[in-house]
Length: 342
Ligand code: GDP
Ligand code: MG
Image (cartoon, rainbow, N blue to C red):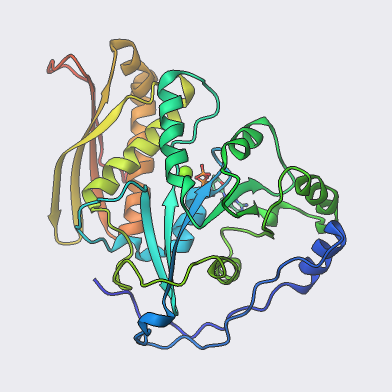
C-alpha cells in the first residue's frame, strides 16, 4: 500500500540554544543536523541508483527509555501498512523509512536483557549483539540526565567499530537545559560517542532532525526495499509481537522469556479485525503471573495490546486472549475476552 501524500513541512533548523549549550558542555562544536533544503513533494521523485543511500540503524537501550516510541515515530504511522513478504534476514528488522535519497532500515532490539545472566538471556543478547554487530549506526537511547547500571550494561555490549549516537530522550522532561551540561560531559567520558542528540521522541521536529543526523551514516548503496514499503512484517506477526510486548512489560522479570504468543485467528470484517491469541507459558505456576488476580493482568495485557494495534492500524480490533501451559491443553485454560470498549 502507498504512503499517504507527504505534506510540505519545512525541515526545522537545528535548535541554536541547544547547540550552544552542547558546545559549552563538551568544549567543542558538536555535529549539527544539516537541514535538508529540498522541499518534500507530493509524489516521491525517482532517485537515481547512483545517489541512493541505504543502511541499518539499530535502536538500543534499557527498557522504558522510549525506544518503541522512537521507532514508531521514525517509521511513521504508516507502519500500519504492511507487506506480506517473508522475513529472511538475520537482522531483526522492524521498519524502513525512505526519505529523499536515503533509505533507513531500523533494527529493533527489544530483547536486550541486562538483569539476568542465565543461559537464555545470554543467547538472547547474542542475538541482539548479532543484530547490532554489522549495522551502520547505533542509536543508544537513554533518558536525558540519567544513566544507571542498566544503561551501562547495554553500553558495554555495543561493538567498538560501529558509530554510536547518544540519544538523550525525554528532553522535554528536563526543565533547565543548562543542568544537562555536566551530565553530557560525564557521558562523553563513557564512550567516544559520534554525536549527542538531546531530543524528544514525541516531537516530530526532533524526529525530522534525527533523520538528517542519521543520514550522514548511511553508505552509498542501492535501496534494499521499495520506498513505499514500511515494514516486512505481516499484521498477524505484529499482533503476536504486540501481545508479547505487553506480556513481558506487565509481568515483569518473573515470567520466563520462553513464553510465546500464538495467533489462533486473524479475521477482517470491514473496518474491524478479530484476533484470537494464545499466550503459551512453560509451567502451571506461570499461568497465574499472566492472569493476575481476578484476571486483572491478562485483561490489561489484552487492553493495551488492542489499543496499540488500533492506533497503528487505525481500525477497530477485537482481541481475545487465552493462556495455556505448553504441556497442557485442558479446556479450563484461562480465557479472557478483551472486547475492550467497556
Ligand atoms: P521502550 O521500553 O524503550 O520501548 O520505551 P517506550 O517507547 O515504551 O516508552 C516508555 C515510556 O516513555 C512511555 O510511557 C512513553 O510514552 C514515554 N516516552 C517515550 N519518549 C518520550 C519523550 O520523548 N518524552 C516523554 N515525556 N516521554 C516519552
Ligand atoms: Mg519497547
